[in-house]
Length: 111
Length: 117
Image (cartoon, rainbow over all chains, first blue to last red; front, side, top):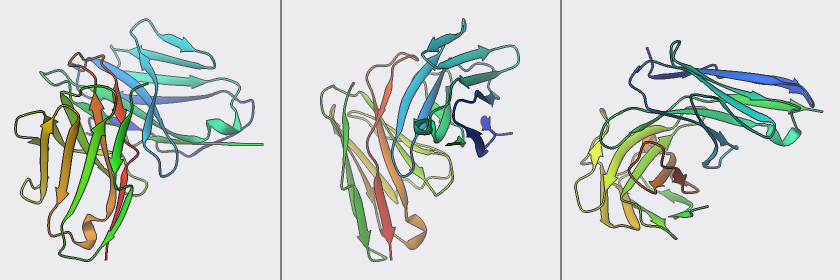
């Protein structure tokens, strides 16, 4: 089983739709969780950290479920500019907190 | 936010040559830098973790003699792909971390696209 798993998609949604992605992780000792966004042929950029209590940033809501070992990202009122690949990142415990990336979920928002 | 640069942004080379990629943290000191490789439609694969002043820690399956990493200062790490072959063609991305806590942010360089003919 991969350490971090994501549905690659693509998720094809109309503008204004609400879309949710899940990401599961296998290491129960994982410490930190993040969502990154990667545009085609560009480097990943941090979208938001994921806290145990859940957190929201504008149209984006991230949640963590430690018991079931998954994190989620909800995007409300999708915009065309939200089209990208969303990467789930999990940092395992240890001295260096090594980050592990999921394969990414591709989102396409169409008019 | 913090800025990480990479140079070159793209390189085309002949099979058998060596290619050096630089990664710099421009406005912060990075005790740890990471090197990733990404093939088309694949996830970022961590190649190695580089700590300033010490030897890099390579992930399983990554040949340390082929991918030489040097982290001579707190703002510069280099990756040298030695005797490159077409299968080494990929998108190489470095990232630098601002601290050592699990919540510290990683900032990514813009990546280097390597094509080996």
